[in-house]
Structure formats: structure tokens, C-alpha cells
Length: 563
Ligand code: DGJ
Image (tube, rainbow, N blue to C red; front, top):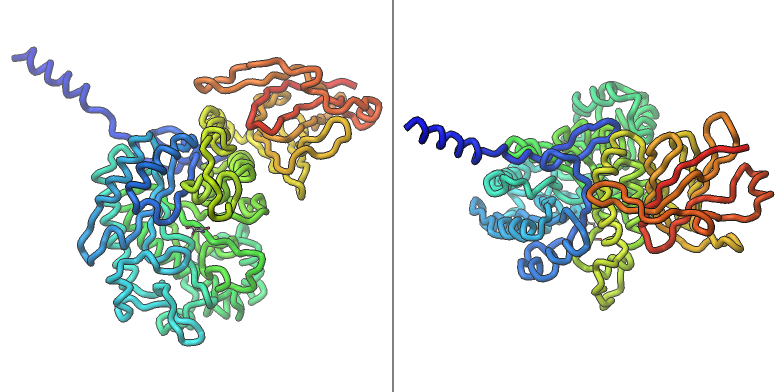
């Protein structure tokens, strides 16, 4: 009897395993990282076309297997309110279950994009019973008096109906996803009013004439030292009052309308996010349609989305939302990530490009801004991995494993633990180069690294038009660089002998998480310039590191100094 009960307890002890940890965001040293299965996780993502996830056959044949071949670990997949609540109160999660099964079969994680009230500002993914009932679910009204197909964020009925569906969805995930295939949720998609700078319906007009909410005023005063410069300028120009209406606090301009809409979108989405987190507290982010160069005023772009101008308003209005993220298709990627990455807003790029330039973006975001990860949009159309907007009919590449993104993601996979450690230690940097910005100096350890686009060693002309480098300091004089199409020279950044020479260099790869050297680098490999008299006069050795076009490749270098 005793033996049997001992055996029983042993069996029980063996079968009771710790439940998989819920994905979360955690500040680790100098970076905020996504923790999955209890460990820091670097997102090698890709977002599929808006409606691809409603087509299970397509997912099975073309999406899941290709995502695995491209070395993704995470796929951003839409789930629409209309698809799960086709009739009010009747929920159908078959699609969600199949999507989870497909991802698991290919060892992939999911970020679900909740296409509820708004997708690219409009309300196209709401159920038809919502579309039909304009009296119950009012739309945004323009200055002309016309209403548009955007649910008004001032509609409590819309907010509550969307919240009910979202909470049901989260309840379902809690039940069917104990292993946390789902690691983050995107709340809505690129919200804001198009066609006017604000909603001009009755409820909106009443709110606009009222005082700016006390919580927002308190946040402005509390965070004055770190407010976005543009927001601070508006508040200061209007006399930096501590109470008043929207126009009294921020002045009478379309920018004030934008801040007003930002507050009300934030409140709506905070309400939904908080209700969802009460059920399943996964990290939640938003994505932003950023201002385009041709836009003249809010409403040309969605007015009220989390733009750099209004990030402080969003932080105050939607504390349940963890990240506000940019969708970046514009060429000045570096400026946009800098505008979104703040100490209270870690960086994740949910939409961008997936070609060679996209790979440079990914490495730069991860290295220069400690990004949680990167995700090109429309990745199921693999022609987009060759160029940003391939003309219709462009044949899909077949050799997926050799596309720049697949090669880059393979390297990021092998280096993940190393990269995440260096993000956390603050010893990771990145360069992002093109013909407009062909060179960048990076100070790291005891040295300045001069990173520039790869040049022809004979005539010094550029050999490439895009290049990038991810640089980790292994010590004050030692670096591990992963790069494509750049060359790097060095200068001392501390007092002492004035010239940096290469003591030792090698190529290598990461195997089982450890650096494994493959070849010594010297001679032709490291000589970038043989004009030694000129080089000496410029305190240069003529030697450096060169990375070719078939990257990313890695080199480890140790420097010494001479005079
Ligand atoms: C941005 C949106 O967020 C995506 O869903 C998609 O519509 C792309 N634009 C298309 O370029």
C-alpha cells in the first residue's frame, strides 16, 4: 500500500511540469526584451497579406512551409472581428484553431493582428451586422456633414461590442493555447481619421468643446522634461496652461484636432486592451501609418494614430498598450525608428520591406535601437523579398533559402542569444548605409569604427549602394562584426598611441550559440589602402575589415596601437 502510494506520488511529480511561461516584456539591463518560454526572444518576423489567414488552403500550401524555409520564427497573422463573430453573439473560432495548428506544425509563433473596429483607419473588417446598424454604431462625420466608413471612436456601443468579441477571442486563446504559440497581439491596425483632421459628429463636438481630461494634463506636467518636442512647442505656444479646452491648451490648428483624436482612440483601445489582458495578459502593440512626405495635414494620413507628435498622449491614454510601433516603407528608416524608440516605447517594426534594403533595416533596428525584432509586410508574396513593390506578374523566386532575408534570418537565428546579451549589456551598435549616407562613425570600446560602403580598393569608388553592420564589443579592443557590403577602419578613441592596427582577425560563424572561427584574415583580406604614406599621415594603417555582398558574414577582430 505504502509502496503503491509512493509510486503514485512519483508519477504525479513527474507529470506535473511547470506551465509554459506567458510571453512578456521585461527590462533586461539596457534593453526591454520580449521573453518567450522564459528566455529573451528575438523576433524574426513577417506579416502576411491582410486576408491570407482566412484562406486555410493557401496557408497550408504556401504560407507556413515558406515561412519556415525563410527562417522566420514568428508570423504576423490577421484575425478579423467579422470572421469570428459573423452573427452577434455567435462565435466561431475554427479559423483561429487551424491557424494555431498550422503554426505549431512548422515550429512557428504567431502575433495575431486584431482587425476589429479599424484597419488602415476604415472599418472594413467589422461584421456585417455592425456595418448595417449605423444608428447603433455611428460613423465618423466630416466637416462636410458626410459620414465615412469609419466607426466613430466616440461610440461606446462600438467600443463595447468590439471589446466583447476581443475578450471572447482572448478567452479562447487562454483555453486552446497553453503553450503560448501566440506571443503578442496587435490591437487594431493603423488607426485614425482619414478625410478630415477630426470627427465632427455630435459626440465628438461635445468632447472637443470640453476641457482636456485631467489625467492628460497631469501626464503632460509630470513628463514635461521628456515630452515630444513638437507637442511641447504646441503647449508652450498656447501659454502652457494647466487647464482649459483643447484649443486653449494646444492652440487652434489641425494638430490640436490630431491630439484630440489621439486621446480618444487611445482611450477606446486602452479599454479593449485592458479587458483582454484581464483574461490573458499578453503584450500588446499598435502600428502606425506614419506621415508621408506628400501629406499636408492630419486627415491626409490617419489623424489620431500614435505618431511621434502624440506618443505622450497615447502613453497617458492607453497605459495597457505596451508598444506603439511604426510601419516604415519610406527610405529614411533610420529617422523613423529614432522617432519611435523611447525609454517608455521599446522598438518593434511590424511592417517594412523584406528585400536587401529591408535586411539592412532589420540589422539596424536590432543593433542601434535594441529592437525586439523586425517583420516585413506581405511576406507570403515572396517576390516582395526581391524588391519592395514588384509589378504584378513578377515571378515568385523559388530558391527561398538564398533570398537576402532568409540568409539574414539564418544568421540572426544562430546569433540570437549573443545579440540579446549584447543588447542588454549596451555593447551592441549598428551602421545603416546607402548612397545618401555612405559612411558612419561608431564609438565603441576604446575605438571609433569608421563604417562605409564597400569601396573598390584601386580607385576607391563605391562598390555597393546598401550596406549594414552589426557590431558587438567583446572587450575594449575586440569586436565581433556581422555585415554586408561595408568596410571598416579604426581609430583610437582614448589617449595613447595614435594608430590602430589589426592584431588579429578571423571569419567565423555561430554554432550551437558559440563563435567558431573558420579562417584567419590577413594580407589581401584586410588591406584596404596601400597608400601608406597618406594613410600614416591620417593616422591610419591602411588595414581594416571588408565585408562582401554575399552577407551577412561575421568577423572577429582584435586591435592594437602603434605610433
Ligand atoms: C499598411 C497596412 O498596415 C497593411 O495592413 C497593408 O495594408 C499595407 N499597408 C499595404 O502596403
